[in-house]
Every structure is written in C-alpha cells, then in structure tokens.
Image (cartoon, rainbow, N blue to C red; front, side, top):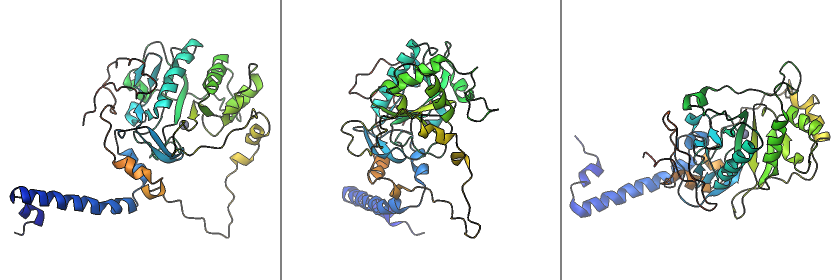
Length: 343
Ligand SMILES: [Zn+2]
C-alpha cells in the first residue's frame, strides 16, 4: 500500500509536523486562485455561509451586485418587531439598517400600526446574491417590511414560517388598491418610513404609489422616495443610502425633487411595463444569462466570503420559544446577539 506523502511525513517529530503545516499551507494557498476562477454561482457560496464576517461593517459594491463585511442580525424578536421566515436566515444587514428598523418599529406602533412591524428579508450573513427572491438585498442596506402589522399576540416561529402574504390589491382589477384592505394608517406608515434622512428609496406597487399620490394630503416632500415597482403589494422595501464613510459602497443615483406622481407613475399605467419582450422571429433567442460568480462581484467579496466568523452573532433560528428582547444597542456598537454562535 502506498501511503500518501503527507501521511508518511506525519511521524517526523516537530520538524516533520512543521513541514506538514507548510505543505498544507501551500496546498491551501494553491487552491486560492482555483476558488476565485471557479464557476460556482456566487448565490450558492453566499447562501451556504451561516454567520457574518468579523470586523468593521463595510458594504462592498452595489445593492444588486455586492456583499457586506461585518453585518449584524436583527434579533428575531423585539418589543415592536418580529422577523419573519427565520429559516431563511436573511435577517442580517448593516448596523445602520438594523437600527433604522428598530426605530421605525417603535414609530410604527406609535402611529397605530398594530404592536409594531413584521420584518421580511434583509440580507444573508455576508450579503451577496441569493438563491431565490431578490436581485438586490446584497449589501445590507435593503429590507422588506410586511404590509401586515405585528399582532398583539406574538407569532410563533412556525406561524412566522407559514403566515401567508396578503396583497393590498383588488386582483380583479388592473393595478388597483382594494379600499377594504387599505387604511389611512398604511399611508402614514409609508410616509413615516420615507421621513428618515438615511432612507433613499421605498419600493411599493404602482397601485400603492397611485393611492398615495391621490390621497396624501400632508407634507409631500418625501413622497418622491416612494418608487413604483413590480410586486411590492404585500410588503414594501426600504433602501438606505450608502452610509457615511462606506468607501466601497456604490451609491444609487439621487431621486431628485419630483414627487413621482406625474409621468413616472403614468408609465406604469401604460402597456409598456407589462408587454412581453419583443421577439425577432429571425434571430435565435440569446442564451440565458450565466449566474453571477465570485469573480463577477467586487474583489473584496472573495475576502468577505472567506473571512473569519464574527464571534458575537447568532445565525440559527431560535427554537419555538420566546426570545428575550435585547436591550437597545448604542449607535456605534453592533447589536448584541441573542445567543452565542453554535460553531
Ligand atoms: Zn425587497
């Protein structure tokens, strides 16, 4: 039987072991470029990581093409929020986003939105592309909030997996909010979310934008932050600007001062956004786009992916027991975890 070379080298005392270590290092180093050149979809790599990386929070790249170092988790339960679909492990974001959600949840309760908010996907522990559901949410600065208020009796983990989404639209009509499902509190909730200076955009269904344009009688300064988009009829999507000092965060274009109730909205009521893409019968359809690989993301994302794990964050969903509410975190410190990491 031929023993592998490394195995033969093992009983060689300290010198031998050092040699093994060196060889292992060389082997690992040798694999580095191979990993980077791999065509494994980045969504698989980022989806497999269960904990954030250690260190200073740093969004890398753009909302729909990037990753985040040093993300923190929104605690699954808070006094005025609950995170939904815990099994997805997508409640990580930049600390600014986590703090915003906590503050917003308190403000939401104050304006009569149940006992607070139900939070949908934020991001994966190290951001990056996801196997399902979103093009953006990659750099810890996007979060979905349900159009369903947090009920008085907290939802169990199971209920949070199973609770169906409820659309605000009358699905028997074209792009129309169902007046039975809409209330002035919905409008106040959206304008509250838009009121924070760090919020740059809020994506809502075009029908919801129209409802706001038609009925909002208060200050319209922030109405332009509500951006019509496909979907977003059972949840809305909050997007933060790049935080100050986040040098690798690629900002999105400013939205301008228009309230977005004119041409921008009427386009959604034209045929154009809903027409199937035109096909040229003489041309072969282009091959489907290849999934994003690590090499296609900002360079720093390879380092984020392989960086040591943050020792303070818990990623796994809690068992079906109430999780104690965390004390409010100071502005400069990552939100403490509910429990230490398992491994
Ligand atoms: Zn979203």
